[in-house]
Amino acid sequence: MGRGSAASWDAADSMGMASWEPGQGRIGTWADGDATSDKPKGGRKRLLVTLLLVAVVLVGLVGVAILKLPSLLGGGSSQVATVSDDPFVAYTPGATPTALPQYKVYASTTSLYSVNYPQQWSVKNNANTSGGQSDYVDIFQQASPVVVFTVEQAQAFATLTDQQAIDAEVNSAKQQGQTFTLTANSTQKVTVGGAQWLRQEYDGTANGVKNHVAILSTHHGGRSYVIVMISTPDNFAKADSTYFQPMLKSFRFQK
Image (cartoon, rainbow, N blue to C red; front, side, top):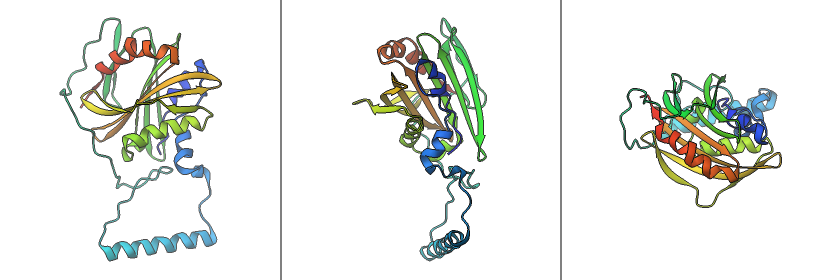
C-alpha cells in the first residue's frame, strides 16, 4: 500500500518504542515482502499470462466488468476502487475554528483538516510518495512525558475498510518487533469532525517498554484518515482527558 508514514511510532521512539516508518512496514504486511522481488520470468511469466487470459475469458462469459484494484506495491491503475465515506453525523465544514486557550490551530492544506494542539507541543510533517501514491502524516508530540497524536491521510488507505487500515497500522509496527494486544471492549464507533470513526485500543510493548495506543480510522471526501494516539499505560487516561479529547473535539474537515 502507499508508503504511509510511520511517524506515529517513530516519534514515540524516545519512550522506548521501536523506530518504524509507516509504509515500509505496511508493504511487507500486505505483500509478504514482495516489494523488492524480480518480475516473473520463464515458466512463471507464461503461467501468469495464461491465468490472465483465462480470467479475461471467464469475465467475458459472465458479463462482469473488470475493476482494476490499485496495487499495494506499485501504484495500481487509473480505475481505483474506493471505500464509501463513513456516515457524516453533524457540522458543516467551514472556516478554520478559533484556537482553544493554551492551544494553537493547525490547518493542513494537503490532508484538508484542521485541529487544535497544545501550544507547547512540537509539530512535524512527513510527506512521501510510493508507487505513485501519496502519504501525509502530521505528528503532534509532547516530549515529557511522551504523548503523541498523529493524523495520517494515505492514498492507499482509500481502498481499505476502516478495520483494514487499523490492522495495517498494527501489523506494520509488529514487523518492527512491537507487541500489540487488543484491549477488551475497546472497539467502538465514535464521532470526530462530524464523521463516524472506528476506534480500537491496544496494550503493547516496544523494546521492553509498555505503551498504550488508540487508533481511529474513517473515510471522508473520498479520502481515508487514520489518527494514532500514544502514551504510557499509566499516563494514557490523563493524556486522553487532558489532550486527546480536546484535540478530537476540535478536529474539522475543511470540505
